[in-house]
Image (cartoon, rainbow, N blue to C red; front, side, top):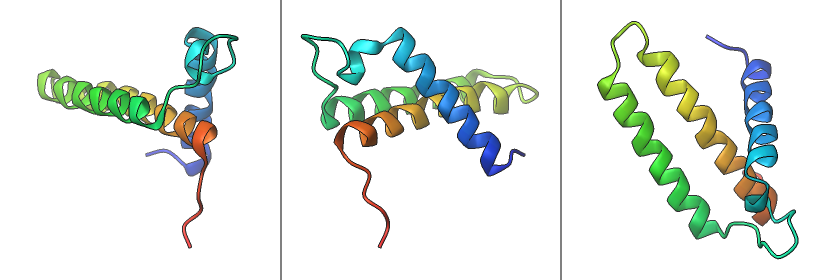
Length: 91
């Protein structure tokens, strides 16, 4: 188990990685627009599929680590999409 603080730290580390390696996706590179919401959804769908495949193909003793590694990436994609397109609060 992880605390909420640890979870958000993991997501922050993923966003830092994404900004460092895939900077053009964030809209911070001249001549490159940020990913659209639709593009972010397509990427998220692909990574969820990767997580499902990783879980399916992993041994029981490593399935959680392998799958949550990809789920961290999914969370980062969601955070980036909200950074670029808005983050409405639950009412």
